[in-house]
Image (cartoon, rainbow, N blue to C red; front, side, top):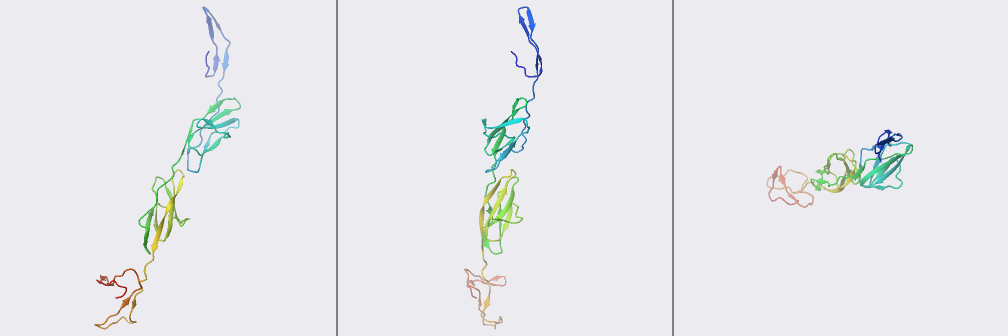
Length: 239
């Protein structure tokens, strides 16, 4: 026997000793199988998402998708959504010829989303000061900063200057389209002490040999100065 793999006119010479005879000619035509092409360019998916796998469509074709060699029930369209890592392929039959073709494997993987934490130059400071917040670094990362859960307009860089007390977070997206909400950092801002100075007299002119008592509101610590010069031992709320 002989397996004919290409189109042509096939005949066989049969010998019996010195006698030979020829069979009838068999005209073999090879019918082209259905065209099966992977038409998507992305083969990964983000956590809690999926990726659409597609192939060429034809009204005469019947489709059956497989995952890791097993038939996927009901997956008989030109596309499927894959949300589990593994090998997918599609078996296509041309109803007009009965020919069957199987695609190459679609190797699907879950992308790893951005991760990391926010770093801060300081998380507590005095009113009028600020802290520089920095989000996780990565190739192709984009950022959206949030304050107390709401997006901050135009805050889309890897760094943010925080000057208001509250919770700062950042949403980081990578070049695969995967995004992560990075845990927030809490910024505390301490109010400046009251620095209202009260003299003991309504006039600030004093005679030589006398004094004028100066007072400030109660606080935790004090240091008096005369101009830019520190007054040694002047560490009470009055002077």
